[in-house]
Picture 1 (tube, rainbow, N blue to C red):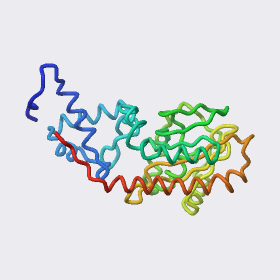
Picture 2 (cartoon, rainbow, N blue to C red):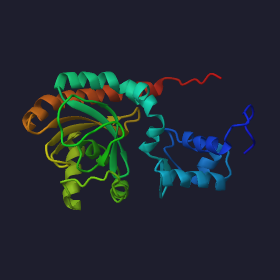
Picture 3 (tube, one colour):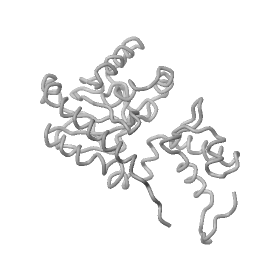
Length: 267
């Protein structure tokens, strides 16, 4: 790759190449083979390979049978941006309205291997068993946010995802066998939302709905979280769930509209 023009003496080419590799992943190609990354960045294959494997070791990318993909950990590189624009900018007013209408904390999380990682949240001051903030990760399967995203995966991809060890440091209360797990995810797919009633930890009860992009793909989950001692299961399902489903539809519609806006870069 030729030297970049108009760079100063302190310019670090290796860092720039690493950022080029990260930027090469786009919504239309979230998984790419080594040859595709090399072609998209203009890097030699050995260079692209070393960068990709470094990103894998650092947790910013994963390697699968079909190639490489970024992980939600990349959000750590720009969490301030996420909070002010992009995903947060789109979701914030909807989350705030949902919190005002339910009186409960509401969050958005994405899959990262067999875990979920929280990427947006509006909280109310209540005592809960587990502390949650942007970047917090939990095992996906015993959470409502994880179930709605796992239920959208093809069977082979689901098995590969759940075969990865959790990096949350938490052991969930619910440890289903394969048959119980598959039955639960079938129910989630059939009804379009997921419930967790103290499966992750005592006292935590939540309901979640999927968030979709303009192509209908599930890209995240949205939940309403409550304390089991304060909010009954009936109230969660009869009052909070309809509001959650309405909000998830509104956010998904905004995601779709955002995809249609032309993105122009001015030099």
